[in-house]
Amino acid sequence: MLKTNHVPEWNADVSLLGYGAMRLPTVKDEDGKEKINRAEAIEQIRCAIDGGVNYVDTAYGYHGGESEIVTGLALKDGYRDRVHLATKCPSWLVNEEADMYRLLDEQLAKLGVETIDFYLLHALNKGHFEKYRKFNYQKFFETAKKQGKIKRACFSFHDDYAAFSDIIADYDWSMAQVQFNYLDDKNQAGLQGIKDAGKKGIGIVVMEPVRGGALANPPAEILSLMESQPVKRSPVEWAFSYVTAFPEVKVVLSGMSNMEQVRQNLATFEKLPAYNESELAFFTELKETYAKRVKIGCTGCNYCQPCPMGVVIPQVFRTYDEAYRVGNIPSCAWHYNAMKEKGTFADKCVACGKCESACPQGIKIIDNLAEIAGQFAS
Ligand code: SF4
Ligand code: SF4
Image (cartoon, rainbow, N blue to C red; front, side, top):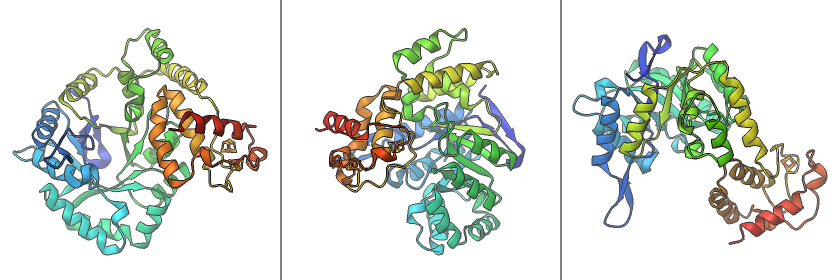
């Protein structure tokens, strides 16, 4: 049996494992464009529901807008009544108050449903939230609830703890969807934000529990540390067991892109072992071992900014350190290409020295930038 949580604030029983419809299987159409393989996606979503998953999460923006349509199709033939459906308002498309109302109606039509159980403002950060405040988002939520178009007002989040605190203090939210895993317990909302939300009766839905897959394939030294434990778990099981240890966490989303993942996740959540306090020490050891793998140790304090040449030093170093930490150096390339296109990459440094005197960590910024620029020259 798949583990479920009874959430009094939601008056609902929800499966701990939720289906995230952001990485559905795809095929190329006749023009070579990627689109969802609808038959496979529908089969996968229904297989998960048949296996006990009763929380399905999509968004206006997933798969270029196709995810909501396919999710809606998957929920036909009686499946709609078996799940809690979540989708999100595309914050980047809200330019006036009326947009929120128009987009919600569009989403209901695309999904082919009467009501959305969890309606989220997508990817809230300080900037988006200021905009929603200006457009009276609270009135929008109250109106949509009265009209029966949504059941619960929620948000997903990508910013820092201060922004999270501001948002949860502003309204009577039902749920917050946050990025959380054993390496991100101090990033974004962090564990502190999760606990604050819990005290206010805001249920937490976790995204990126395996950090976009990075925690599923850890470097060899992390793997051997895991294998040295008396409890035997796969890296994915360790990652899931961490996030499900906190009572504030009601649902853990997994973006399942093939049937094997669906089956593996169902099996994992059926036998997910109860987390115990003694494992806290192991996660601390795990985090310390990961932390020792970084090359530069930039804290992201920003004291070295701005650079007269526009080099985004903290971002360059963070990307590099992160890649070493999880043992995936090629993963830097995409970010560095984006920085090169914007003209903010390490190769713009002219060694003026302005930044080094400002760095409290004493990092040899010029040498490190030169090394990174050389390594990622092509
Ligand atoms: S040394 Fe390089 S990175 Fe530092 S401020 Fe000067 S140009 Fe910018
Ligand atoms: S001042 Fe030093 S530690 Fe702070 S962001 Fe810049 S390089 Fe990193």
